[in-house]
Amino acid sequence: MRQTALLYGLCAQLLALAVSADKQGECLKGPLVLEGHETCAASSSEKKPIFKDEKWEWKGEKSDAWDGPYDCVENYCVFVNRELGGGLVLISDERNVHVIDNFPKKKLFKYESPPWYVKEMPGKGIGLIANRTIKKGDVIMQTTPSMLSQFGPHLDFDGETRIQLYERAAKRLPKEEYEAFMGQYGVDEFIKVDRNSFRLFINGENSFSGHLAIYPHVSRMNHDCRPNIVYRIDNITHNSIAVQDIQPGEELTISYIDGHLSRKERQKRLSDWDFKCTCAHCSMSDEEAAVSDARMERIYAIEEDLEKMVAGKKKIDTEAADELLRLYKEERFITYIGQAYTRAALLHSLMGHEKETKELAKEAAEAMRIEYGEHNSDSKAMKLLAEDTKAHWSWDAMRKHEERNKQREQMEQEQKQKVLKVEDITAEDIKKAKL
Image (cartoon, rainbow, N blue to C red; front, top):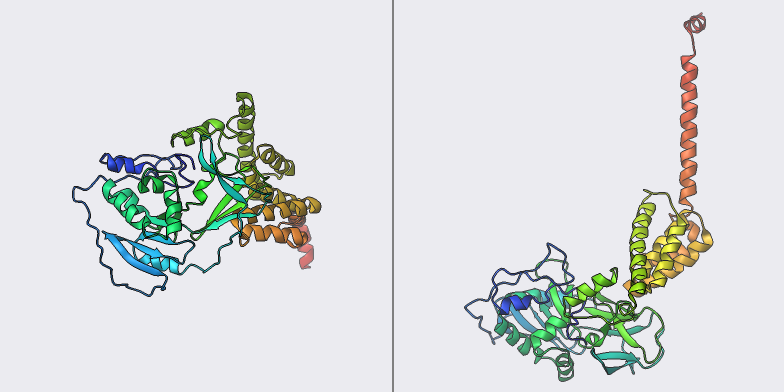
């Protein structure tokens, strides 16, 4: 993996520099941290925490798979589970052991012979190369982390304590997993955690739920602004899936950043990691890049319009939905195309276009399944729309809406006529009626 391949979503990058330099009150921003949402590293404490080697008493029930706690510092300890994947060390407080224990037990998908091999890549370090044809939707890798560390130790501890804690934790891994962990980029365990981590929340976005997850085998995949692999994390299980057919000899890549950006913005995000992307999309000529950037601006504009159309706030234009799909394909924006197919399918359904709706809904269901998993509600909804289009709530809704409006207008007109007839009755007519 590249030197600064800190993976998507890690908000803690570079914060340790503030700790080790003892820069009190400094908040360093990473490329994926929104303005006003920075995380600040605490200044180093003059009093260094002391590791406690003695075991604690467990406060609740635990599975027999767990050992520990070990190497406790303040509220954090090392817990070891040798049955999860190739082995897991958890640096956290005790309640998170029970959270992980309650995750559904699922057998990980594994190849007898993986469809990739590890290779040294010029200017990139190591990477993964396909050794046979990989089909769109194929699972490339499914793995649990080797290490999970709560945010606190990474952000709050002084440099010496933090490195010692990571060293002690890593050495408790089984031999093979330890070697994989140490084989990642980084001169020490802190850099390996800091540069190769995914951020995840194991129990909702509360203060104790946030963890940095290290998947050594996943970290071998390099970045591309238009990757051929999409990933998702279910609980703590990392899933890597092919979003297109991949031929033997092609590199397997994921994206470390949001792809909805111009080339200038993408390069800026990656340069915050001292990283210059040389993927095909970043290496195009200035003229080609300008065309690509213009497509992205148009994609943004159409997506905003389509949201208003689906919400009934703007007149439906199925041609705009078709244009969006064309732009996604021209831009090779395949990892995000599920939402575009979904919007297009709904709009065609609203207009009563059966053939187009079925085709688009089928594509949407498959794209959403690859991106979010087979149990994703949007994927299921699109599958139902494709299979029984006319039974869906959106089917021909615009025509029905217009008919209801016409009926309402007709009723209002008839009511007005009745009022007018009443107003035309004279006093003489009333007198005659009484006689």
